[in-house]
Length: 296
Image 1: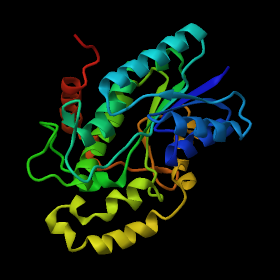
Image 2 (image 1 turned 120 degrees about the vertical axis):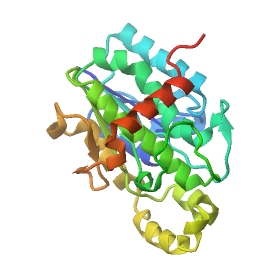
Image 3 (image 1 turned 135 degrees about the horizontal axis):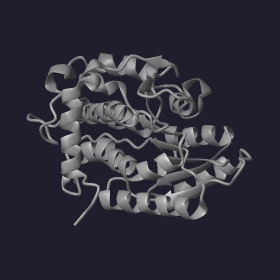
Image 4 (image 1 turned 180 degrees about the horizontal axis):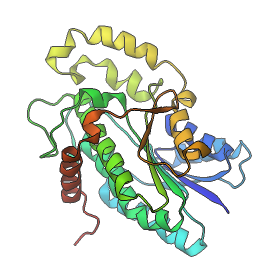
C-alpha cells in the first residue's frame, strides 16, 4: 500500500528536512507552502533522493483560513478520487512576529501556530480515518513553558511580546493535540506532538535576536538567554526534524497516541498545563469560534 504524507511549511528548513526524511522512509510526499519557486526547489531536492514516488508541491498561504479550507478540500478530494490513503499529516507550520499583526482579522501568532493546523487537521480527519492506520504530527516548541495559560480570548491582556504570544499559541496547539489523541482513541489515527528543540532557522536567527519580543521583566536577562539559546539552535535543521520523522514513522509507536516526542527524538513528559482538561476545553471553544469547520 502506498504511504502518503503531507508536510505543511515543507519547502525549507525543518519542514523540508522532515519531508526528505519521510521520502527516504518510503512515503510519497506533498509539501505545502506559499512560494512556488521554493516549492519547486524543495520538490527537486526530495526527488534527488530517489524516492519511491515523485514529490509534489501544493500552494497555500496557511495564514489564511480560507486557503486552509481550500487546501483541505483539495487533499480530501484527491485522496477520495485516487483511492490512496492519507497516511501522515505533519503540521510543521509556525511563525513568530516581532510586532502585533492580524491575519483574517485574528492575531497572527495564534492563527498561524494554532488555528491553521487545528482547522486543517479537523477538516482532514475523515480522510485520515478512512486511511487508518494513520498519524497526525503537530510540531510544538519549548516556548510553551513561558506561555500565559488563559484561553478565554485569542489575545491575552497586556502588551504584545512575540516570544510569549508564540509560546501561548503553541501551548494551545499542544493542549489540542493531546485532547485530540483522547478523542480519537480506538480509530487507529494516532496523534503526536514533536518538539524540534532548536535549529538555525530564519526565526531563530532573525526575530529572536530582538529583545523586545519578551516582556520587560526578561529583557535584562535576554542576552544571557539568547547566548544559551543560540548554542541550542546552532544545529542543522536535519537534526531538528528528527522528532517529527520519528513521530511519523517509528514502528515502536504503532498503536500508541498522545505522546510528545522531545528534541532528542524520544518520548518526554508533556507540560502539565497542556494536559489540563480545563485548558483543553477553553482552547476547543476558542478554536471552534474563530476557525469554524463550516462557513455560511
